[in-house]
Image: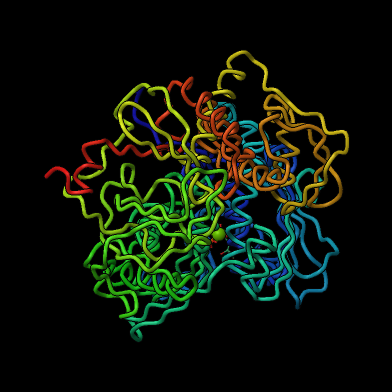
Length: 634
Ligand code: ADP
Ligand code: MG
């Protein structure tokens, strides 16, 4: 083929690929434009996964009648005149690419009016070509309807995921944007149903209530830090969850730089996670809403066509301010020092100083259930006490060894239980670390001796003495049982004679109802029950009903983050979530018979020594270790 210049239509379609990847990217671009136009109310409507139709309506400045066509021209923008303006940018847009790109791959109806005009304009465009233009009565502001996305680029259309996945992506974009703009009132309708409504009060916590529910919002801790001035100024504000409020998916990390939503990954996300170091359990993620503001010249926003990434001029400085702000908020809010290594520890206030203390011992403070241990039992075995509420004496805090094998990760801190106590790890007097029983494949026969701390089962075996985390063990058993049932194609369900009503954030309820079929395979049967409520008619037999709400919230989270995940990921997520919300929790008295049954079931598991999250279910104390402890052997 000879060299030839592409026709403007083809060139536009190719360029559109950079900006318009899926319906959610259309929503993002239209939202940016509405915000740049100073809107205070924005309504987003999506139908058929946003592929059939997306509409964004705002009460912003509107587009003057004689500029409407121009707005759809390539590189036409009212936001930037010189390249140097990039360094003083106050707007989200500046490339003049979104409207022409969207128009080249869809059918558009733009209705707009400025406050000074008496009548507005309606412009219809399809595949980049203007079809019709009429005067039109409307209130000031702009409404852009995008229909049949990719109708003229069938290959792109084929690459789209299912309607429900696209709806999830749209919901996420609107949620992110609403969190970045608490002063704007957002409404999201999915197939005509209300999925999100914020009040535009300007209070970030109000938006969090609408997205994560009142109970969660109430628990979030404020973050506020300001450093430097002018070019060096860094301001960090927002809300973060204490370590006890976590999610199974990373989708609850919302990061904004100069009001721009940026992807929660790379160094920026890492510095936030790092600040929680050792306070979160494996596979759990905090809820984080952080707005970072720097001088417009201190950040390059033009490194990505969708502007989802930014580059700081002085990343070290900005990142350290963010990390510090999050750590301070955690310390303030929980009274727990989120130290991770001695270097960090040295930055902490004195009261959190790391210092050696006498070895831990388990004292009478430990409640004794159906146990043959007397309240005088006193062990000195380097096993940490459980977290509050049992709260033994202050312990020394030393840097944690490998998280997965550390005794600190045994039980105590339940998934939705209290935060780990101020001393996640205690000084262990033994020179050699506890063996990690996860290395051993099979369980020996275990003889139940009793229960300590309402959390651990004490058992004896020829190998030595075992401490078994009752909740972790039960999680493992349930997980394998569910896996087996799933393999046989049937999750055992409990039909509820009295269906229970579960209150959820409206977006979560919407997601769950959308995924009704998928959830039925796991034993759930749900109906809509008014806004933000679902009726649970059946649930998996292993689920503790009082935890139904928590489990459903987690499932909604997974659905929400499903974007790139595979059916295997989904299966694993469901197994882990359901296994976690069973009836045997830490803090429950178990009879000897119950403990025996639990251990028998555990012995039958294929991986009895770890819970589905990868933490150990048990700690072994060998006779040799005990002998060393008692000075019988060196
Ligand atoms: P950019 O946002 O980068 O300038 P767009 O293609 O998204 O490029 O929009 C082109 C122009 O159309 C904008 O610069 C703005 O002047 C105008 N415009 C687009 N959407 C709106 C809106 N909702 N309200 C007012 N003006 C708008
Ligand atoms: Mg734009």
